[in-house]
Amino acid sequence: MSQLQQAMAALIGVFHKYAGEDQLLNKAELKGLLEKEFGDVLGNAKDKNVVDEIFKGLDMDGSGSVDFTEFVTMVAALAAATNELLCKK
Ligand SMILES: [Ca+2]
Image (cartoon, rainbow, N blue to C red; front, side, top):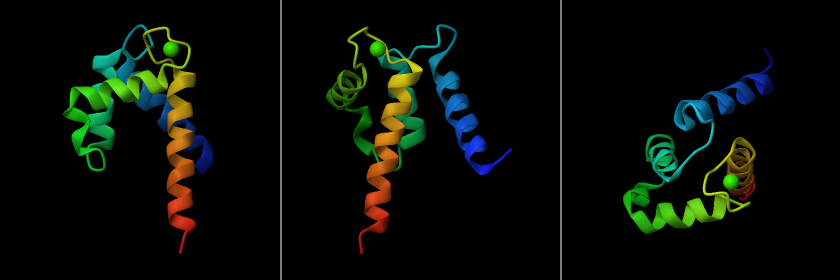
C-alpha cells in the first residue's frame, strides 16, 4: 500500500472505530473521538459546549449525526490548517 492509501485506510478505520454499527457519529461518539484522537491539542473537549459547537459545525446537513463525508471534511480542514502552520516561517 502506498503512503496515501495507508492514510486513507487509517481515516476509514478511525471513523468506524468510533461510529459503531450505524456508521454515523452521534454526539457522544464524536466526543469520544475528539478526546481520544485530539486530546493533546483539544484539552477542553470535555467542555460540553465545545463538543456541541464542533458537532453543529460538522453536521452540515443537519441530520443529527456526522457521516463519513462530514468527518473527512473535518480532517481535510484540519490538515489544511496544520499544513499552513507548518509552512509558515
Ligand atoms: Ca450529518
